[in-house]
Length: 292
Image (cartoon, rainbow, N blue to C red; front, side, top):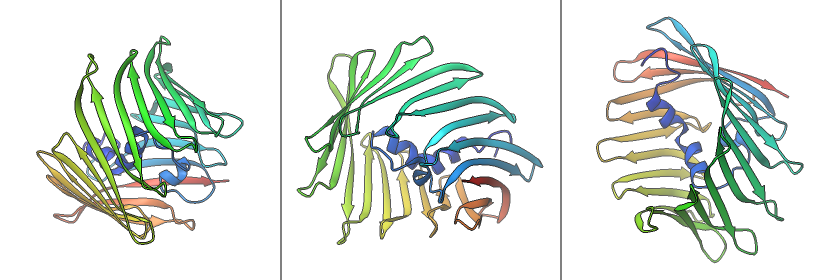
């Protein structure tokens, strides 16, 4: 691993895929702390990475949260200096109505959200640093507020839709991505399918992309246990411990396991990264957590 990165790009992907994916298909989240598997009334988190071979510390993100468990600000570091940050703003009902993204002190992206009378997001628009629209997402719902479709526009061109399907009890069964070219012709479709156990808890989520990539997440009693990711040229298997934290990552040229130390709230404050094939500890993360 390059000691100057925090952490390597592949592990940023492997460790944070679920969060990014949830945002990508425009479903809402309970709050940012829950989505990051952080417990308790947390006001801030700060991570650092220590690499044994280089004997060097690298500073990670510093994140502050409001009392509702949602992000207020994210500071990103490069060479231990702030390289960029995000600021999140909320309306009187607690909705994340605005986000500003800065790089090297300059505003690079600005996101606005509009909510309907049921307090559901209805529209999200992203602008660049010249206040030019980059992307617009329209959220279409039924009379009860259930999300049935998301429509994506770039430069006023319709580029993608996500269509949601439910059973007669209103439980999500699947959603389908449809991608369109500049002429409005469909050129690609992907899908995500849900299976539930006898108690209506999620059992399996199967994702299919490009007709060649498959990602399957398996749950027991509603808790994530493992994820298998199969790509055209590689595959990965991830397992999770009883606290819901990633435990092993194996596949292709990757074979890692993790050891944790937890605080009284059940949140990890130290995570050792071990290269399983030879048992060598590559380094460790520390996470400082401040509570309200």
